[in-house]
Length: 312
Ligand SMILES: Cc1cc2nc3c(=O)[nH]c(=O)nc-3n(C[C@H](O)[C@H](O)[C@H](O)COP(=O)(O)O)c2cc1C
Image 1 (cartoon, rainbow, N blue to C red):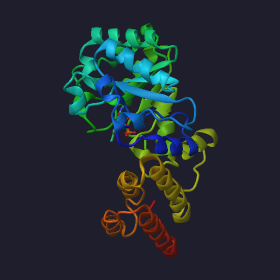
Image 2 (spheres, protein in one colour):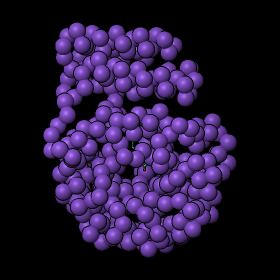
Image 3 (cartoon, protein in one colour):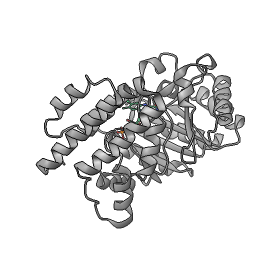
């Protein structure tokens, strides 16, 4: 997820039980590879294996080059983004816009699969709009091209993030291919993860927004799937410890100035729905140094612990 799944967050999610965590997307435009943003996105030092990197673009040759560039920089899985609805991405006919042009999809998949010796996976939506749900056709195309796993966000491009993810379409996709299918969209609890696996017949589930500020959702889901039992929610002290370690890793990765700023959205997610969270977020957004940010976070969660409460 762009702006979210940087290396510190991926490492945290893996430590909390995620089986795989994919990088923020790397543009296929080589002109951007020298940028600070791309430099950070291709930094996989100390990352759990397999290292999976997502690439985005619409030109088969450029996508092949981007795949090679990332494999040279440590990627062990290349994931192709055909799921992103962002205007910035779609206006240049990349992300989910590509699903309109199946021939071009085929050319991109062939070019990338043939360019690298590592597994290539694909992320799609269910189609371009509700009248054009062509994900099943794209899935078959992907399988023929040698794509090794397919993640499906159960919405069309036109649906943005509105409505509920349509997992019945994911079921139809799964029944038409032999490669692993990963169901994605609106999975926010262990119970929902189990239901979606059941409803779709998918081989795995992918969690996006529900992991923001709740990275322990992965171990909760893994435990529930293995035992049928729910792990208790972490208390304020445990959350504080996880968040402070996360913050420390952000400061190291980005440097203090940028790290403190990147951390703000994560702190907001961790404190969402909690007692006096609004006041805390207003205050924390004024804080400029790592030491003060850590102190403020520790103080807030200690107060929650004193109140003996945490919103569910
Ligand atoms: C802030 C944000 C950034 C995202 N960036 C990407 C991205 O770069 N590549 C991608 O394949 N999907 C991206 N997505 C989509 C998610 O991977 C996922 O498909 C979608 O959020 C639905 O899953 P969820 O309901 O579990 O969040 C992004 C979503 C959000 C909210």
